[in-house]
Structures are given as structure tokens and as C-alpha cells.
Length: 522
Image 1 (spheres, rainbow, N blue to C red):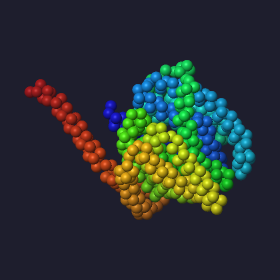
Image 2 (tube, rainbow, N blue to C red; image 1 turned 45 degrees about the horizontal axis):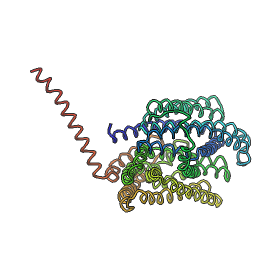
Image 3 (tube, rainbow, N blue to C red; image 1 turned 180 degrees about the vertical axis):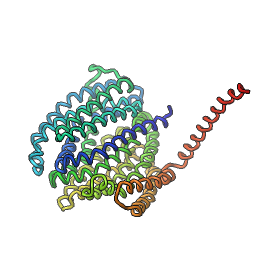
């Protein structure tokens, strides 16, 4: 199978899993919100945010494992892959103890940390966080085995397992809420579905992933030091990323209340889903970028540009749709009382355009070993995010202030700064990169956004039918804009010529197969 075909297979599989998540989110989220109520859903969102911090005990080993697995495969040192995997698994066994201790400590002190949360709700936090800690441990183990599948470009198997786990979670959630169970039962469903996913991932990796010898003897302190030398800075980057995405809920929980956490979290649901959709485009190319980093920095830069254009082909259409149609979608989806979530959605969505444009730059910097630089960029963004959000909430801007506190640092750090260093470290001219990427997606967005606004204003109205029609029209308008503006003309013509060649070859083969039959009949 050609590399292009492999990318397409991986991307289609990733989007299939993404589509399943979107379907579940669309139907399940309103049910969960209305079943739990704003206060309990706000507590659930806050606990999920805290759980994101528990994952920091992996101190960057997750990212480091993926980097070194592909790096050693690219440099043909397959024996080092086994050492990395075994060292990673043993480390996670030890880290699981720390996760449980941290979860217990946070649960016991939850009422003191968040005094504005109803004490009756706070009393449930301990057992829920302990269940979440088990879920974190299984996620870490699953990520290690998942790296072996990604190294073989088996994103299809990864997504099959994720869909099975998703179905288990969705069915379990509906059952426990329909029985009137609370947040503890809901966390039990999450643990069960993660266990299903872990079993499926381990089995798939051992059968179809990159070959590995499993033995405790292959794990070593020297290998851990190597992993940690990369992972320590990756840890700082992960901590900063979690602060960027999860600290907002904590700030709102401390300075405002649980209901405001719910409103802010609902506004972020569509953004998180959109980021995942776009990230899949870059993610399927990540193993090859990591392998190229072991041999050719120049080739890494060229693939980075290609990945950026492919990413923005999806991102421009998505962000334009979120800004113009997202607020109405939330009103139809959750109810008119959640209309103010739309302002949060619009503010953060606008900043994500620049962030998504540099997914490939971030991946390339990590693959080339510049993990310290990436970590410092994210740490700066997290610090600016925290300070600006607190100041704006203190000034009375509420959740809208938190949204601006998230959006502005993201546009500066994950946007402009990451792009600058991505070009410098891969040897690309900044002018060449800007002309080849920003010079394409920015005009496409400038053309597409006003059209979306006109469509929305022309077809404005309540109801899913009217909204679906707006989405369809905007999509049909964007397809030619995206192909003509974002896809380089040479690549577009090469794709068309390749398709014509395949059709001609297929017709020739069919004619060659029919000719003997015609002679036989004669």
C-alpha cells in the first residue's frame, strides 16, 4: 500500500472514530446535563478537569515513549524499542500508586479547596476521584501499547477499539442515569469502558503492532534516564497544556460557582471536538515525521509544510462554521437558556485558527528533540492564561473574561511563536513557510467567513432543519474555496492526473479481460 493510501486509510479510520464520538456527544451530552442538573454537571466537569492534572504523574513518559519508538524504528534499532516499551510499562505501575495517593488527598481536601461548592456535592468527590485515578492508570498503559499500533500506521485498529469502548460508556451512562444513579456510578461506567479499551488495545498491539519482546529484564535505569531526559521537558509542556485547558474550570470554580463552570464547559465542548477533528490530520503523519527526524531535517520541514496545508484544509471550514453557526447550534442542542455559552465559543474558536495552523510545527519540533523549547512556549502561554483570566474575572467579566484570557495567549504563543521556531529549527525560510501556508489559509478564511455570515443572516431561524440547511450550504460553498485556495495547484493537478491514470488503467484491464471472451465467442 502506498504512503498516500496509508494516510487516507488512517485518516478515514480516525474520522470514523471521531464521528462516533460526535454522535454520542450530540445525543448524550444534553441528556447528562439535564439528568444531573447544572450544579452536579458543573461538579462533574470540575472533577474531570482535576483528573486531567492527575495524568501529570507520567512526567512526560507518554510522549517520550512515542518519540523514541518511532525514532529507533526510523534508525533501524528495533532492539531499543523493546527496552523503551518495557521501561515505560514498569514506570506506569509505580506511577499508579502516586496517582491514587494524589486522588485521595485531593478528595479529602476538596471542600476546603472549593468552599463555594455545595458541601453535599463536595462529599462525593473523594470516591469519584479515586475511581478517576484508576481510569488514569489504565489510560497510561493503553497509550504505551497504542504507540506500537501507531508505529505501524494501524490507526484503524486503534479507532475500532475506541469505538467499542465508547459504545460501552454511552450505554452504561444512559443506564445509570435512567436508574437515578449519581456521579459515583457515572465514574464507574467510565472505568469499565476504559478497561474494555485497554484490553482491546493490548490484544491489538501484541498481534498487529511493531514487534516487541516483553520482559522485565529489558527494562533498565539507563533507558529510563534516556526517556526522562526527553520526558521531563515534555512533562512541563503537558503540565502547561493541561493548565491551559483545565485551569479555566478551576478558576471559575474558585472565583465564581459550579453553575458558571457548567456554562463555560458547554461552550468548550464543540471546540474540543473540533480540535480533535483537525488534529487527526496531523496525527496520522506524526509517526513519519518522527522517523524522518532521525535522518533528514530538511525532509522533516517539507513534510511539516504539507501537514500544515492538509490540516488547514479542514480547520478553516470548521472554525468559520463554529464562529457563525456555533451559538445557534448550542441553543438548539442544549436549550435557549444556554445561549450565553455561544460567546465563549466564538471568542476561543477565533484564536484556535492560529493554534491549529501550527499543530505540525509543534509535532516537528518535538520530533527533532526540541522538547524543551516547546515546553517553555506552553509554560509561557499557561502563565499568561492564568494571570489574564484571573484579572478579567476579578474585573467582573465572568466566564467571558476567562475566554479572552485563554484566547489571547493561545494566539500569541501556540500561534506566532510556535510558527517562528518551527521554521527556524527545520531550516525553512519563514517567508517561504508563510507564503506556502499562511498565505493560503488566511485568504481562504477571509473569503469563507463573510459568506458564512451572509448565509446565516439570510437563512436565520429556529429549528434543527433550518440549522442543518445552513450547515449544508456553507459546506458546499467551502469545498471549492478550500480546494482552489488551500491546495497547491501542483498537488491538485497531480491528484487529478493520478486519478485519470488509475481510471485509464482500470478501463484497459477491463478491455483486456473482455477481448479473449469476444474471440472465444467468435
